[in-house]
Length: 251
Image: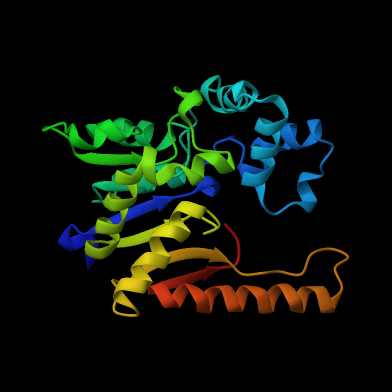
């Protein structure tokens, strides 16, 4: 219904770009964690690891270089998922990714794309556009401005607060499909929590694609049951924001 009405929107997380050969958050932070003698596999707060690295060196050069090396130097690989998303009758795309795969897929589909990765871009509109891509954490071609460390999130409402306002507006008026997104991003948590505070359970319906937990090789039944229970609680918590989980067996 939302596709037919023109009110559908996509929110793409790092999982969408992994199949194109790009690193996910853990992969991006791994070299920084290694330098700090931290095991990235044992850490859950990856934003804090990035901040530890900035604190140690008193600058962001290595952080910007990590983004530049992972994303800017690679040839854009458009996957089948990107091609499907690009040919849908959707005009609004949000992403926390730094790479250019979404806009590249849209351009290959013959669409004129209006990319917004800085706050100033929000007041500048292409009149011939077919789609808008909001890159709320920045773009790989401008790595020094990317949002990654904890201090970036702490200042986000000052440096990029209009992105939060625009995202809240779209969440109120459009039906989102969240794909490749873990909901661990502090900015998304900020927006969703405030929308829940203002609107309670009277919110627009959205959807997300999640992979059902599966027994891993050598995993004990107790550990598997724990992960299943944790996922069930997570799915129920998403329902507070009227986000319905669409479960798949594999991606």
